[in-house]
Each structure stands twice: as C-alpha cells, then as structure tokens.
Amino acid sequence: MVFHDTGIEFPITHDYLKYIEDVFKIKITITGLTDDKAYIEGLKKNSMPYQRNLWCNGVLKLNHWKKYIKEKFDCPNSVELLGMRKQESLRRSDYTDRGILKDMSSIHFALPILEETEEMMKKNFRKEKIRLLPLYRHFERTGCYPCPNHNLSEWKTLRVFYPELYCQSMVYFSYAAEVEWYKDKYIGRDLLHAIRDDIDICEARFKEFAITEEDLYKYLKSKNIKFGGQKKRV
Image 1 (cartoon, helix red, strand yellow):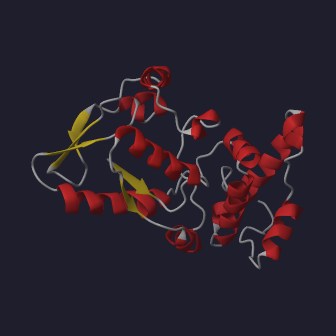
Image 2 (spheres, rainbow, N blue to C red):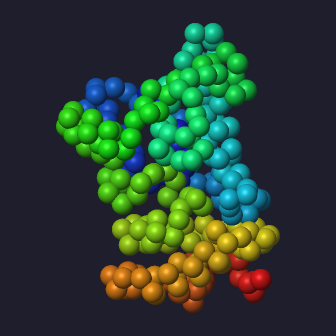
C-alpha cells in the first residue's frame, strides 16, 4: 500500500495511516513531500490555486506520484489499484473500472470500489470493526486541508473544528503572487468575504467563529507576512 503525501495533509491523516498499519499488520509506504515548501514556492510563483488553474495537482501530487510509479512498477504486468468511487464527483461518475495509466503505457490500473456508495463503504467498515478516518465526521471528502476546492461549508467546518489549520490556510493565502487570483469568486478575498458574510447570517453557533479582514491582517502582521491580496476588489 502506498500513500502519497502532498506536504499539506491533515495531521490526523498520518495518525490514521499508523492505525491501518496496526490493524492489517502491513507497512504503508509514504511517498511525496515531507513539508509545505513546494506549496509555498508554488503560491509565490503561480498564485493561489483556483478552479481554472489547479496547478497544485501536478506540483504536489501527480508529478511525484508518476515518478514513483515509473521507478517502482514500470513493467508489463503492473496493475495499480486506486480507491476512487463514482459517487465522489461528477467527473468520476464516468470512470471505467480498469484501463492504462495516462503517459504510462506499461502500467494498468483497476478501481475495485468504483461502484460502491458511501453507505456501502461504511457498512463494510462496521462489519470488519474498522474505525473510519475521523475527518469523515466533518467532511464528505478529505485531502489537503487548505484545498481550494473546499466549499463554504467546508471552510466553516475547518474554522470550527480545526482552527489552527484554518489560520495556517489563511497564512498560505498571504504568500500568493499578486496576480488576478483574488478576483476569482472561489478564492482569495472574495472567499474571505463570503466566509465572513455567510458566518454572520447562519446559525448562532457559528457566529462566535466569524473572522474579519481586520483580524486576518493583524494576525498576518504579527507574523511579519504581507498579504498578497490586499487590493481593492473589482
């Protein structure tokens, strides 16, 4: 079993990997990155990832993963098992359960749980008495904690249950190159405004966690960090 680390994983994910090793008596190989340096450099060079420019997929995941696969398993009989399911996204709903990896003609892949639903997966875990990754108490899908694909509900959840990681995500925002990322409605200052405004009008239990731009700027200033998106919104 192989787990690819992007350098910005939830810490609890690594704890869960150790749990899986103990339960199944296996060794999980962790590949990829050991810190967030590549992400920060990418932010400075490419700006914050957003829906039309998810450069992080290549820089943090695919490039390193492909290199590892080619080095370890580039032979005609190699088959990689991937844990993706149709229910996870509209794009994955069109996936087939087997094929050849793109740019790696000698390596085949198979998706053994492609047709399984979330409820089927949970039922299997309960049957085998295996704990789910605790993140699934709060998120439908997991991955990097500062993921630009978080919706507003997920950003609020991160703020409430993982405040330190939420603040670190805001710090990452500050590294982004001063390009037009802040105009994108999914990211940057628009996202901060949306989060703030949404928290203000939602349930009372979220209001105490509301964050203002002034709070954010004070926090960044205390860290001697310049906020790259401090421009007038268009």
